[in-house]
Image (cartoon, rainbow, N blue to C red; front, top):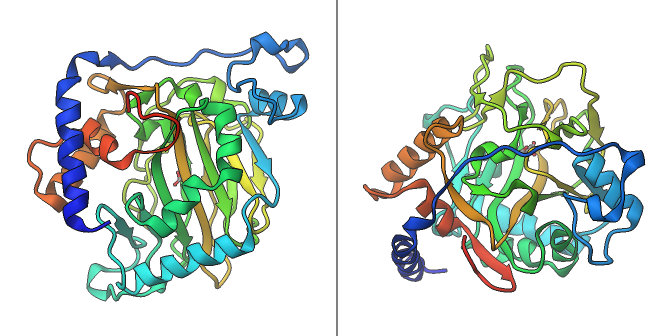
Length: 337
Ligand SMILES: O=C(O)CCC(=O)C(=O)O
C-alpha cells in the first residue's frame, strides 16, 4: 500500500474510533475450566462448534490451550514469505507501519540493511505479499474454530531468530500475548504460528506451559538478564515453576494455534542459521477494546504509545488507535475492532 493510501486509511480509522469512544470496558480476568474427563460439548469454552476440529482436537485445545496442525502451509507459500522478508531486509520495499527489529547485541551504528541484522519484522498488514499469510484459507479454516466467522488479523510478525551471540539474548522470555492486547474477550483471540523450516530445541523452538490459558493474565516486565533483553520482550516473573513444559518441535509448514493467555516463550538459537517463523494473532471482530488504566497492561501501553508517537510524530495517538490501524478484516465483517 502506498503511504498516501495508508495514511488516509489511518485518518478514517481515527475518525471512526473517535465516534465510538463511549464503549470502553475495564479489563477482566478469565476463569478456569473443569477436568478433561468431565467435558460435555456444551461446556467447551475455548473452541466453537463448526465441524472442522475433531472432538479429540477440541478437547486437547480446551485442556492445553494449543493445537499443532502438521503440514498446513505449503513450501511454495513459505518460499514467497521468505523472498518478501529478504526484500524488506534489503530495503527494497518499505511497507507503511512496519517495524524492523534488531537483536539487542547489534549496536544501531552497525545496522546495515541485511537479513543478518533483522531479528523480526512486525506489523506487516500493509505488505500484501506477507499479509497473504493471514488470508490463507487453510489458516482461516482453523482460526474460525476459535474466533467465529468475523475475523480480524490484529498482529503480524515474521520472526528471524538470530544465532545466539553467547549473551543468550535470542531467548524469548515466558509471557502471555494478552499482555500486549487491549481487547477482549481472550477466548475469541488466537495466534497462528507457522514454522518456516525445521525448528527444534537447537535453533530455539517454542516452549509452552500446557493449561496455563485457564489462569489469569499475570504482570509482565523486562527480565533482569545479564546479556540484555530485546525491546518489548516482557516476561512473567511469577509462574508455577512446576508446571509441565512442552517443547514444540515442528517441521516447515506445521502450524500451532494457541490461546493468548497460554504462557510460552522460546529458547536460545544455538545453531548457525536464522530460525524463521511467521505468525498472526486473529480476533473475533466482535471483540471490544478495553481501558488498561489501573491494570498490569499499563506499562506496555506507555511503551507502545511512546514508540509510535516518536516514530510517526502523532502526538495524540492512543493504544486503541494503534490497534485499530494494525487490524485488518480477513473474513466476514469488521465490527468493533
Ligand atoms: O518465535 C518466537 O521465538 C516466539 C515468538 C513469541 O512468542 C512472540 O513474539 O510472542
